[in-house]
Image (cartoon, rainbow, N blue to C red; front, side, top):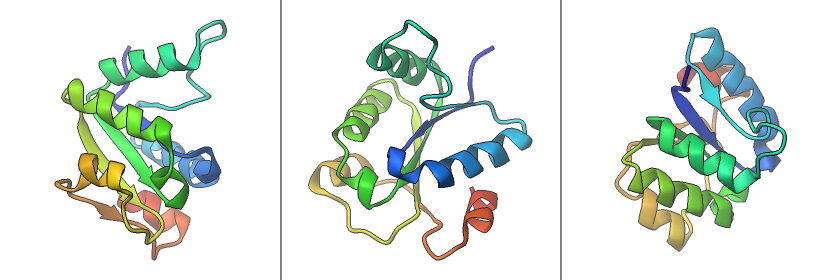
Length: 124
């Protein structure tokens, strides 16, 4: 059985992401996120690439940390080339870096930066 949502995030935002994934999975959305869903013996790049190819939606948790991440830029490029729907969720009020602006400037955003974690995850 495949996943519904690939969650892209900076490890510095893991507490928020864990709560958000838990809430989404309570609502029966099957989420894929590292490191939980990387099988033993599979490299991170291979696991992430396969998951993005096989998952129709990418949920990007956007923060100052993810804004500077080269890995997230790669994940967004892969999602775009695989025609995944990308939904950015802003958890910090930060201006987009040039590289993420390229990927995200024409997307509808969910804003959770002024909400506490539980309310933000419910909004997602």
